[in-house]
Image (cartoon, rainbow, N blue to C red; front, side, top):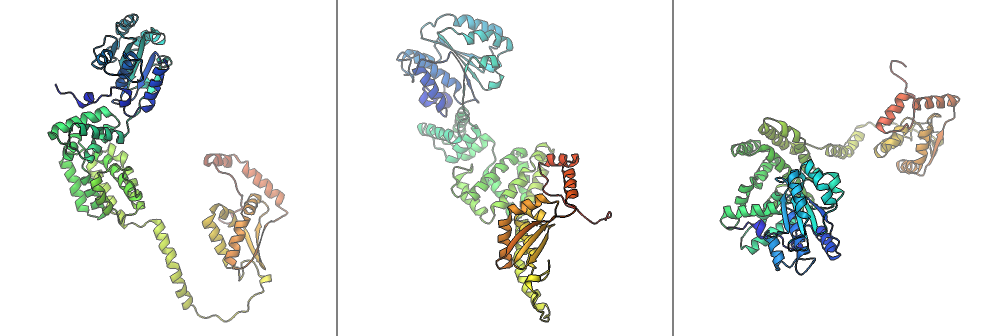
Length: 527
C-alpha cells in the first residue's frame, strides 16, 4: 500500500520538527532536568506538528536509552510508539470520544501503572470538542494525574478550552510554518524521491498550504500523481484552481496601453472559463501589490510572490509607470472590495474597475499641475514688464519716513505668502496683524487682546527675522509689539468669556484643538 508523503516524511525526533525550535528546546530541557509537566496543551493550526511532537516526546521519555532529549528510534519501545502499537501510548480522538462516559473510562485506565514503559502518555486530539460534562469529569485528573501518566491535549481552537483546564496545564503554541521553510522541505522531498519540479510549482504549493506542512505534502502528492512523475507548472495550477499570472499581466498591459476592447475581451474570457470573479479580484489585488514591490525595491526577489520567469516581463511593462501611479491603481482597486463582495454582478464591476484604471494614465496629479503653474510664472513675468509703458521718474521716498504698506514694502505681502506656505498655523495669526516698515526695522503690531498670538510670534521671531532679511535683501530689525489700549481690560474679559463658552469648549474637545487667538470680524449685514 502506498505510504503518503506526509506519513513517510513525518518527523521522528525533535531535530526533524520544522519551524518549532522554541518548543523543541523547551521540551528537551524539561526532559534533561526531569521537569516535564504532567499536563500539556499543544495548540496551533492544522499540520504544524502537534501530534508529531506528542509522539516524539512519548518516545524520548520511554526510550530504553533514556529518558533522552532525542529518542533512539531503534529500541522496541520507540518502534512500538512510531507504529502506534504501544499499549502505554494512547491517542484519543476528542471529537468522537467527547462524552462523560469516555472520560470516566479513561480515568479508570490511567489509575494503573504502565504495562511496559516508564510513563503512560495520553494524547487527546481536537480536545476542544469535549462536552462540558466531559471537561468537568477530566478536571481533577488533569490537576493531579498519577505520577506515571502524562496528558497531552492537542487542539486547533485553543480558546474553546475552559479556563479551569488551561490554568492546570502548560501551554505550547505551535506557529504557522513560514512559506520559505515549506518550500525548502518540499524541494528536499522531491530530491529524495527523484522528482523534477520547478521553483514556481513549489512556490504555488507552498503558498496554497498557508503555513501547514502536512497540506503542502498532500498537494505535492496530488501533483506527482497527475503529472505521472515530474511535476509541471500547468498541472499545479489546475490542481489548485488558481489563476495564471499571464492573465493578470495581459489585463494590466491592456490598462496601461488604454486598450479598452482588450479589457472587455479578457473579462469575457474569465467568465467563459468559469472563473470565480471574486477570487480573481482578490488575487489581482495581490498581483498589484507585488508589482509595486518590484517597481519600488531594487532587490526584491524574496519580497514578492511572482513567478521569477515573469519578473523581467513585468519590469518592462511598468518601466514608464511611476510608483505613485501604481499606488493610485492599488487604492482604486481596494476601494471596490466591499462592492465586489456584495454585488450580484461581479463581471460588470470588474469591467468598470479596469476601464476606470485605463483612464488613470491621462490624469495629472495636483502636485504636477501646481508645479507646471510655478514653472510657467517666470516666463510670463518678463513679457508683462516689457509690454508696460515707461513711467516718468519719481524721486525715491525717504525710507526713514516710509508709511505702512507704502513704496519699498512690496515684499511684505510676499512675506505673508511665504509664512502661509511654510508655517500655516503662524500665518493664521500673522495675517490679521499690522505690519509697519520704519527705516530698517519691521514692526508687527499685535492687538492688545491677542496676547496668545503675540506669544506665538515671539517664539517664531528667529524664523520671521531670517525671512524678513532674505526678502528685503538687506540687514533689517524686527520688533513684535503688543499694543496697549484703553479697551484692554474689556478685550481680555471678552476673550476669557469666549474661552469659557460651553459651545466653544465642546467644539475644542471634539476636535482636540486649542484657542490660539480671538479676533474681531467686521462687515456683513450686521456691520
